Length: 64
Image 1: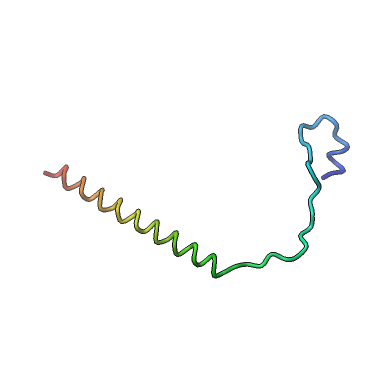
Image 2 (image 1 turned 90 degrees about the vertical axis):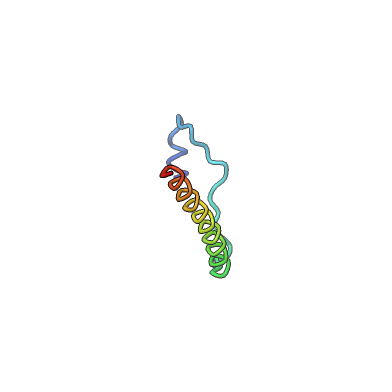
């Protein structure tokens, strides 16, 4: 890509620095991912419960 970018003079694309290969491999963190998913699921579940309750309350008010 750098060679192509150097050949094209009229491009608005500028490279700030070349890509650098990582020094060590990326290690997945399954415990962190599970914890984040659990907290997010709990949060979304609570929001959904409030939303359903609100919709049922407004439906009952319209029926009266």
